[in-house]
Length: 230
Image (cartoon, rainbow, N blue to C red; front, side):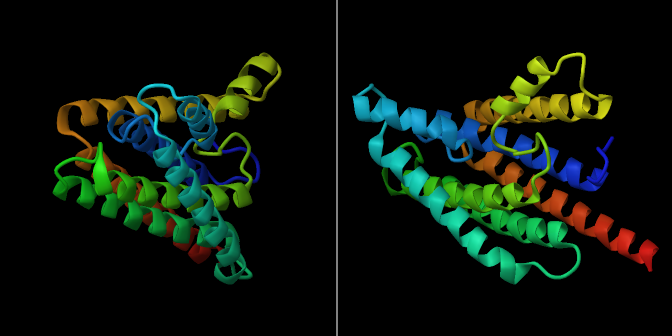
């Protein structure tokens, strides 16, 4: 069920990415030492804990995540005018961002599979950097799309909207907000369960596959729509 002006395939893609955020941050927080790579609001708070000297939090790990996230967002912002064409800007930008994300997350999964551990040492920082960069690219792209309640990583405003506008929203708005919450929660549950039983490589690989499949589905849907228009 799409809101007016936002195609259903695009909404479905953003929901899939929201679920991937839950998977990625579950792995990062549980397996990489209490750090986020998708949710930078949480990461800034975690950084504050680390600076204050709270046990189990790392200044260097959270700074690595913040730095690579910003680099990813910067690169996506600079590349956007070059990637975008006259037609299909939304889909083209998102597809490139999703391709980048899939590659970086898959590489992180490979490192997690080959390294003895991603909880400490070089592998931890490489995986954090790869995931944070990918999420920075995605967030910059999704921000440019500006689909209401579909940031794919932050749900504070979505929850606020559900409560503040209760009884006044259109059915499509309620659906979109509820679906975003459900996608993030589902991703977090799946990511945590897989990490606790299989460690980090498998959930990250699944996240990369989901992004890839969602990207292919979006590409096929846009191609079909273009054919119909012709």
